[in-house]
Image 1 (cartoon, rainbow, N blue to C red):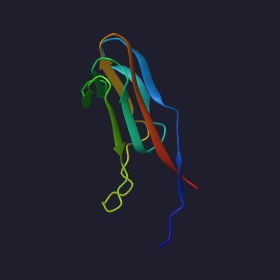
Image 2 (image 1 turned 180 degrees about the vertical axis):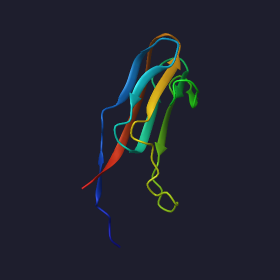
Image 3 (image 1 turned 90 degrees about the vertical axis):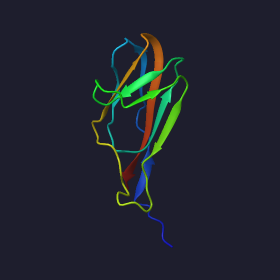
Image 4 (image 1 turned 135 degrees about the vertical axis):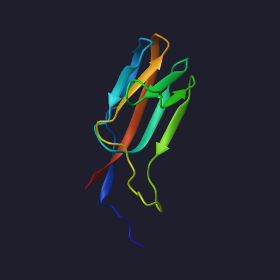
Length: 109
């Protein structure tokens, strides 16, 4: 059995927000196509996440984290990913709230 070593995992800068206004505030924009994303609500209140700054994609309760693993060994879209340029917004109680998105992408070697 051969192992495909044509890609290696890379760690771009974390996307994060620390102060919310009560409306949708920018968390950050993907600079690479992610393979794994970690959404982490480090605040003590719920935070809504949006990709258009208008509609809520998901609400994260206080302290909740979610890991999205986009790899698939047997599916039709083995390299399923989000587009470079996808922008995330957070909405929650105005004040100090920390929400971060960390991700790993595959770099061709």
